[in-house]
Length: 239
Image (tube, rainbow, N blue to C red):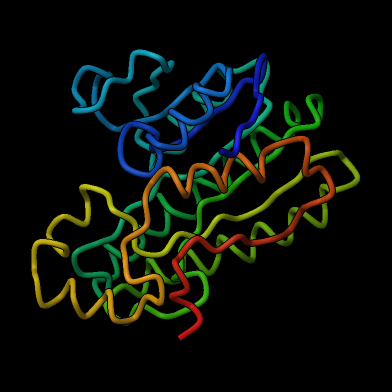
């Protein structure tokens, strides 16, 4: 069993209220960290999962002033996990394209830049959550594809620039993960079978498997790893 120790660490996981983000936040809390999460609903009680172990911030990440207020709240940060994201129903509509870009990429960039001074002080780490779409095209989701490819490029660039400041920046790129947001896909038997045929592991990934990858890259024990992408996809990209 892989274990990590983040005792005394302060961690922020955007979009940590559900799905992969919740699994990441849960894993950090179990490893001893003080975990802050963001969500879009008014309070933590508005979510299905128990968020009582985390410090909840209601933030609309597409709002620049809301992001600035979030940054200003902290006087210390050891790990930033940019996990929050969205996909539009019609990303060939330019307004939806812009909305997806703002949440998925611009907000993450703003938080990386805004938290840089605190991360320099702590010798901290950034883990940006990309996607298999960081490497392959999702033809029905051009904005989502663009943001996840951009997340990879952003992470590599700032990892290079900030390495001498003691900040490490890496990417975890999940494939098809078993979360509620994809229930509609798994419940469609034919669609689910078609997806599983593309995955050598022949199963959906677990959120906890993504979380372990995030904790690995955030750990001081791997302090010589920066500017890298760790794909968690059951072999999807092999095909």
